[in-house]
Amino acid sequence: MGLKSNLHNLKEKYKGTKMAPAFNAIHTFLYLPNEITHNGTHIKAADDLKRTMNTVIMALIPCLIFGMYNAGYQHHIALGEITTKANGFLGASFWTIDNLVVGLWKVLPLVIVSYGVGLAIEFLFAVIKKHEVEEGYLVTGMLVPLIVPIDTPLWMLAVAVVFGVVIGKEVFGGTGMNILNPALTIRAFLFFAYPTWMSGDKVWVHGAVERANQIAAGENVDAISGETILGSLAQNNGVLGYDWMDMFFGIIPGSIGETSTFLILIGALFLIFAKIGSWRIMLSSVIGALVMGLIFNGVVSSGWITESSKFYGLMSTEFWHHLLIGGFAFGTVFMATDPVTASQTNKGKWIYGFLVGFISIMIRVFNPAYPEGVMLAILLMNVFAPTIDHYVVQGNVKKRMKRLKAKTA
Image (tube, rainbow, N blue to C red):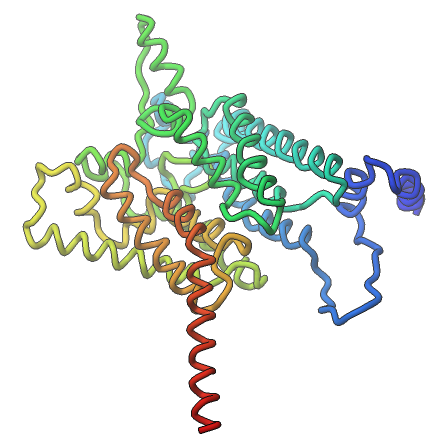
């Protein structure tokens, strides 16, 4: 009671001042708001925006923890200190303190910088514009570290977060008004501003970039490579050293939180059960990806594409393997379903999700310089989501008008 009473006294002290929005954000993070509505009809519920965002964060925590272990695991494999595929997901060599230490050392600073810079900007805008601090960045701050390479420089991440929050959200009016997913806006800025740090065969495993620089400087050290499965396929090398179980459980190089389809599925079920994530968007995205994958497999089977083609590697990949590699599963579950930037109508969600999946695999195959497509596909469909909903609503209006004319005729 003492802490709550002191916080209440501080709230009264800051009431009406410039710092009131910042203090209220901290106060309501610990306690439910005590504001009461007096007029109109309102839906009564126990949740609010902050609690909804915290629910999504809980769904992301398993991916974060696994990503830490996998970061250390891939690092030690690249150094030859662990035998590749040492009993896989359930193996004792994966869940070791050494792997976790490497993961914590590399991942935790990314999380701290993401939240520190992003929330500082949110608080700054709230104080300047004299409105309540918006909680939308709670999820974005967790998503950003999970979708970047392990060795992303902290200053680079900070610059991208500033761009993503200011240009991707605040200029549109803040949370609920942005047309692009903020986390993907940050990721897109990183990719186009610093492409060598976002793609290639060195950025996905801790230490690979440093070893490459040492070799370039003439030092006598062994090189380590962290090429992802998508990178290998884009170079027509095929999937080397990984089976579908490795890809499903996530014992592969990649962005920190997007490798384990297994844990992403658990997060998807959690979000669906909590009625936060749209199962329509998730399912239709999977259908769209499978359709595009089947089309490419058919093109390869017909002989139109030969092994000499630069597109052959990804085109010939089993259509269902596309669901397990790259960031498709993570993007579909945690970013395509963003309630602000996705379609709002039920029929629109089916169309939106299908196109996200379809275009993701198309970009993945036809852009070998960037063998991934879910980021660009989701951002593209974010732009078209309002248009999809508009035509869905207009279609429903026309149907009702026809029924009305039929009744009055």
